[in-house]
Length: 262
Image (tube, rainbow, N blue to C red):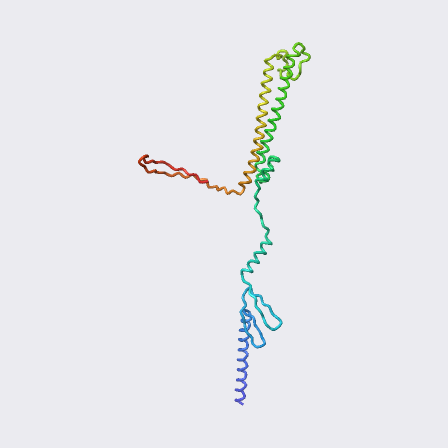
């Protein structure tokens, strides 16, 4: 009877031991399966390691083929996708020839093309002032010129006919005074001086307007040409003493050397 108990206990112990061995083997197989791929053939079974970036392809003859993709190819494809998704921002670079042509067509267009909008008040303010100067001086020139012409004609042809005197030169006489007091060569000389004065200022205003026009064209061209010129804010002055050794001809000299970095 005791021998039966011993046999039963030994059988139970062997069963428990086999169960523990099975559990340990199944855990080992699970750990191996996470890091490898089972390759089955008709005759043999083997394990090959699988790394990141590998693509596993299975064919129809119970075999497994591993294709390895290099990391450089993966990175290049990622960069291509990023370049497609991210829009490219182009840096603005004005064309100097186009800027000059636009400024020649109409003053200020070259500055607008160069995106220097702060210059527009200077450009148009200068042209408006010069335009007003031209028109105002020209109006006075016409008035003095017509008065001088009519007075010259009246002195020759209507000296004894006050009723035929032209009103143009009488408008320049002081208010309430008798026009006959101004009917002389001296007043004629004054009218000629006024005519010449306003002609000179009108011509000068035209020259300044033409110069402003050319300056706008030159500014548009230079601004476009130097649009991306790197201007460093470091403007420094360096002063250091200098000693020039003497020679047989010149004595030894002492002084200072000034240098400006820009």
